[in-house]
Amino acid sequence: MTTILPYNPETAAEEAKQRTQEWLRGVYKEELDRDIGQEGLDYWTDDIHGRGQSREDVLSNIRKSNEKWLVDTYKTELDRDIDDEGRKYWMGDLRGKGSGKEDLTYGSDRDAQTREQVLANIKRSTEFKEKEKEKEIIPLPIVCGSGEQLNSAGTGCVSIPKPKPKPKDENPRYKPDPRYTPDPSRPYNKYWDAIDAAADAGNRMTDDYYQRFLPQMRKEVMLSIDEMGAADRYHESRYEGTPPDYIDPADLFKKYRGGDSDSSDDDDNSDTVSSLSKRLAELEKKYSINS
Image (cartoon, rainbow, N blue to C red; front, side, top):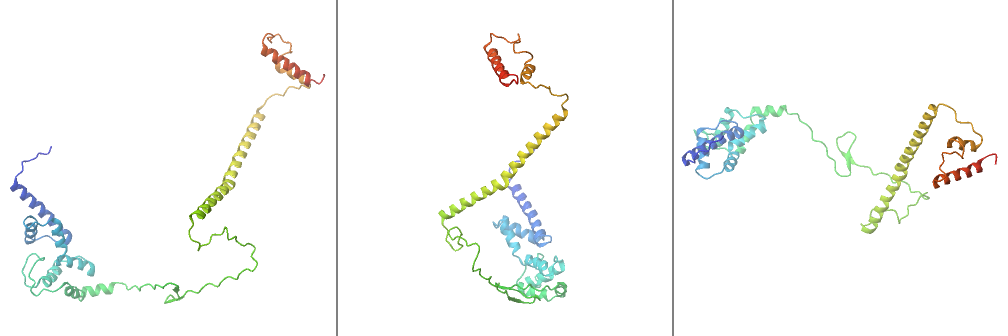
């Protein structure tokens, strides 16, 4: 459980300064790659808590300083972090030699050199010259202009030869109908373009129907027919016994009725049974080979 202490102005101000100093130490490590000195710590702390500067203002000023420029120049020109010896030497040129300040960010401008002069001196150093020798010199690619291309040796540009025009067919087999052939130079027309789009969509639907839907439907129908035939052959192979050998259809009627048409099982008083019996008698008479 966090305990909330009563507000004390003196303690709060001191704690705020401590937080600012911790932040300054981190900024110096990240931006200048070194520990902050006591003079710089006091200066920037007073700048925030005494002169009304924000942390963003202080960070911006540090990044604009000569030391920050020198740190970045070492990484750019010499491809390494600056050491203490180089920092002290070049900062002496930037702030004026004989300043005697602990914090290298500040100092007298007496006999100070400009950044351009310091950069020129860095490039005259032996280390910079050795770095330049180590770099592999890569020739710049040749970029040809519009209508040009590299020659066979790849050393220059030549004009792209124009293609020879195709000979015109005096009697072409197919002459496009200008009414249905779109003209690239024709301006946009929302009515005709809409009709063209609808016709194109209809053509695609027709092609899809005949080329995809119907073949797929035929394949499914044929598969169903094959399955039905396979089922018939399977059950036919399992049938045991022989079908009844009846020549007269009347015998078949008697066989599957369970007896004679005058069987006492029929209920003559039922209209349904009477109607069925009458119909069966008519069928027996009609299809009997003896009648």
